[in-house]
Length: 215
Image 1 (cartoon, rainbow, N blue to C red):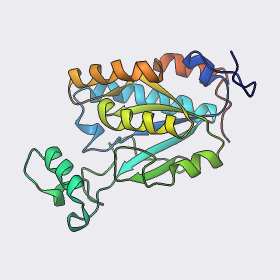
Image 2 (image 1 turned 180 degrees about the vertical axis):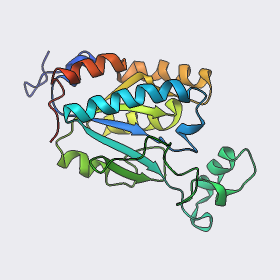
Image 3 (image 1 turned 90 degrees about the horizontal axis):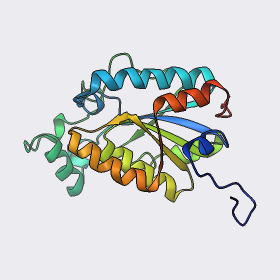
């Protein structure tokens, strides 16, 4: 199937990953976010597998890093969100501040020099960041999403990516939430508007050069 410009329209995740140029987004692998997932041990194995496969295939690896502003610079909505994340304690000074333990990357997942780190303050890779500019400069058209949380940053970023003209592919066994119910509810919605694939399917495509690796 083609569109009005005779560009092939993908039907499956494999169609997306074997055409165009792909980046892997490892979302919020920080102690206070991904590090709080109940499935951290299982997810860490999958994240590492995807990361190694992307590196070996020359696929751009993108790392989101959530850094909150100083409490006095938070707007009311952000302060409300932080209050919920700090169990109602209303202690924004303890939430994802630069140099803090919770904002540090999970041990073993510190960014490598060749990875693109995008600092952000909202649950979207593209909100008020340089991500879109950097990805377009690298020729990226497709974005594989992995990390935590399925129902927050993964969902927000997938929607925002589509609005900007990227094809998002959610690695189903590489995303997680803070409760099984939240994860399943989010995946039900994500399956309806994004492409999804297992990490093994993605790794298999990358290992055969299908991702048109970025160099």
